[in-house]
Image 1 (cartoon, helix red, strand yellow):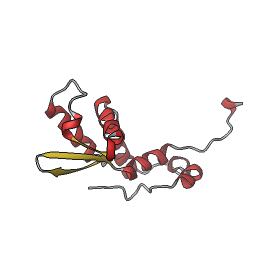
Image 2 (image 1 turned 60 degrees about the vertical axis):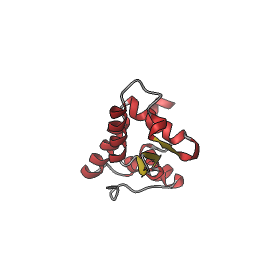
Image 3 (image 1 turned 90 degrees about the vertical axis):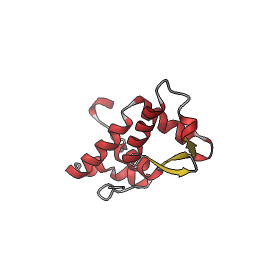
Image 4 (image 1 turned 180 degrees about the horizontal axis):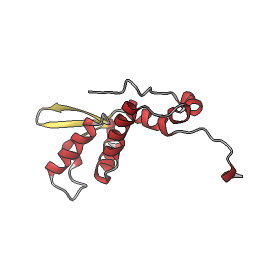
Length: 126
């Protein structure tokens, strides 16, 4: 389901010197894909879910462990997890009656690399 072809994953050294937004303006397709990811992260419940999954022991969490910390219904949590999955921020797998989720590090690295801008001296910092 990943549509990341137009968005290269950069290593830290590459990101520092050649962050995509500094190198050239985003194309329409890349902007649409990135906005989908950022939109998924813009909701506080989804952002907390992503953090819960990422910080869970072993790097993956059962959906049964994700419903307790929120004051919303289980179907609402399932909806938010679906949005995160569709944005390629988390992966999932059904094991028996439960679904397990994990963060997709390549997608987060891609978002991080996009936003890294090399430090430059500007008039404002003088």
